[in-house]
Image: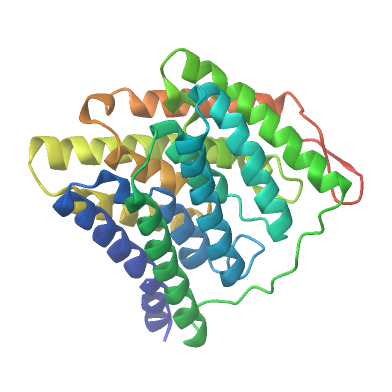
Length: 317
């Protein structure tokens, strides 16, 4: 009975791996790299692999929010003729506003907005990928809940009070400053979009992972090195399709999360992002991401204090 129960727990992981294989495979076959949306692996961790959804949201709000964020990011690229270093704060302010008015805590929407700005994405294939892949994950989640293979989390709307608005404003402002330096020196992956999501997750008062910061840091580093080494070894050296390497990476990340009980969605996006970037960037990507996350972590440990819902102060140390 226990063995059967354990096998059932592997179904969400299998679905997530298949979706990653499908997404990267289609991108590889069509030559449209914009079809690769790294945050899908993060959503798979939070919405499928974790025992219960890690964000306070329902399926309808999650889909509308992530699509709105993606459209906002692309609109800024197209219609705001400013340098990237100035576009990012605009994007962060806009997406934080969207998160607040959605009454959710779905922070991966940040990456959906910032990623196209950072990469200068103009292709409608990006929006297509975000919409289709998110819809497939949410459909899988619904089916798993109906089958009793996942716990359904009750959606409790986030109250957009002064404390929450201040929290999001401080997070956006701090992330903008930390993002500006890497962009100005031409090394944007020191502040890759999943790291901004991770920073905002960890500086939210309710986040329990502030008690596991060393493990979280190690997991981010492992995810970055795993994604890059998988692509370098399997694709660049052995010539296997990227879809295979991405699926194996996704599988390893999800099994690692299941084994450790550390379901930290940004790790999934960090592991998948190497399949989107240029091959010549693979060797330095994991070092930049790890160093960048440690910089974000340093800001947290220096006790940036954020007001919680009831006006209390949170010490992330």
